[in-house]
Amino acid sequence: MARGKAYERLVRKLTVEVLWLYVARVLMGSEPLKAYEIRKRIAETFGIKPRTITTYSVVYRMSREGLLKPLRLDGDVVYALTEEGAKEFGEAVKFLERVLEYLKG
Image 1 (cartoon, rainbow, N blue to C red):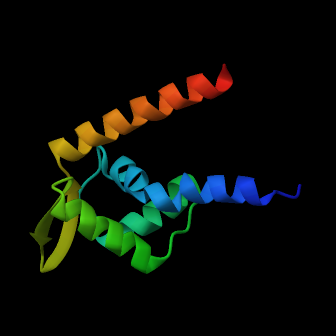
Image 2: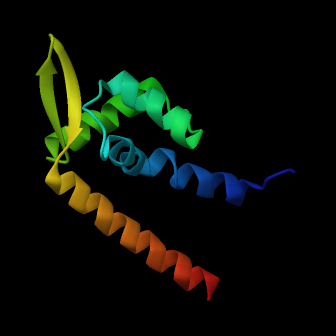
């Protein structure tokens, strides 16, 4: 089925442009992961294949904002979702649920 440009923009806005939601979700209840493992898990779980640089940028930004905590593990940097990150994710999901209810009518 052919998709229009409006639909394609919507998909981009709800995936790549809010990738932090997917990062938070894969880390929720998970062991800390390396950035490339986060990208791989997003692809496996949601079927979204964000560019590597995009994933790394989002992970670093989330770390700076306190949503992720970088940890050293056997010489590697892994990332864990912080309490603040989980709270922010929960608020975002509530917002999206309200938007869907409005759109459904």
